[in-house]
Image (tube, rainbow, N blue to C red):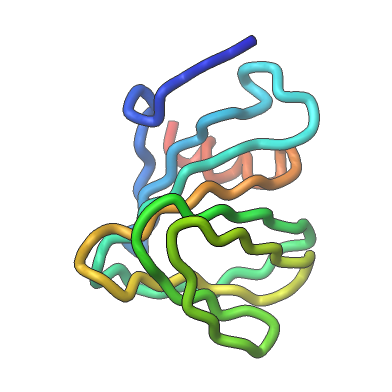
Length: 118
């Protein structure tokens, strides 16, 4: 078993002002998936992404907008979101409080993000 608190994980910043914390990763022995915690502050620059892997997302705080698959939907704490592979997507904060969510992806898919911040 492995347990870690989000506050004890190194915070990485994206060029667009988002915060990422790798909670569970291949580095601790996770064999299939990696779990990240994102926070988007008010005023962070939106950025659209598209990847050949799926995303499972769970909103833990705040409210935001998810743009994906030609739709724009408001989401809030307690909502779960599935984004299929290769679907352009974007997350935006719509409140003063940070928009925080857990995102799970297949192991190793975004190693370049970790390596860039070492």
